[in-house]
Length: 98
Image (cartoon, rainbow, N blue to C red):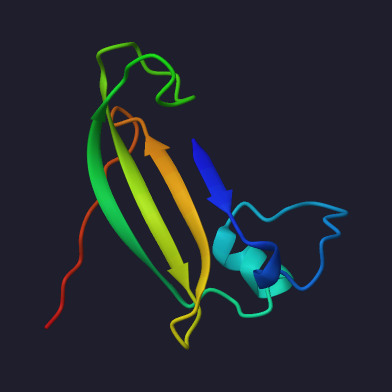
């Protein structure tokens, strides 16, 4: 389950005729004044309760929520996303480099 929020001021045009890209990164290249360069994600463990997610997992089941902030290469905030992931189908890895 993905909810993307983009302020009107970040968009080139309010006309969304045609298909919307599945990737917010690709969408931003086409539709935003400044494309997304990188994202910072907060990874949050969550347990399904009433109305906390449209994700089709059973009440009481764990899932992972990402709070993402998407930035242009100059550090300007372009968009925010809330991504809910069913742990039974997808797991995240973290790659770190010094």
